[in-house]
Image (cartoon, rainbow, N blue to C red; front, side, top):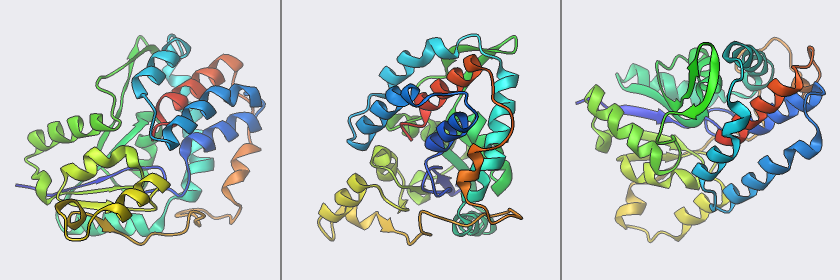
Length: 269
């Protein structure tokens, strides 16, 4: 059987919250106002407390996404990725991906991000397999529906098990890299969990485990780069906040749909 290495995105492969980066991108273009952040901010607080119900968030934002242009959303996210996300990729984690690849492991992104975020990142770091949230498209427009179960929390274990069955992967020999307490079900599923830049609740969980217990023996705290990280491939040394001052603004409707999209999947990543 094969060994897989699964990677989360925010604060794991990149040194930032991609949802926050996207909100700044929209605000910097005049396409979103500060009071539009109230909903995403509320859900972010719930997430930080580990109280978030992802299905409630999904139902809340379905209407904003329905009927929006897939091509417009894709183009907007491509520019956002190149401007805001590429500069904060962790070179250390790219090196870790390369190590797994050289070892013959199957490498995959496993994230609650959508393909709009994950696909350009996967191309950048050379990851073939994407286990992410998929928004349904018909006739070039978003339907407002997503493939269920959502790839978040215990939903990640569903997609990881399915992937393992399809690719002859032994999960007990496989790796998962993440920073978030919401990923605890997945950390407990694999035999080689790796915690990178743990959030407060995940760090506390690791510290409270009894040394020598089964759970403790399965977990490894992996040193990672600081939260502020230099670019992987970038000719300028300008910080990531420069993403808020370029190009023309998207239309208000597309901006709100994009904000809804990121509220759906990134406040929960």
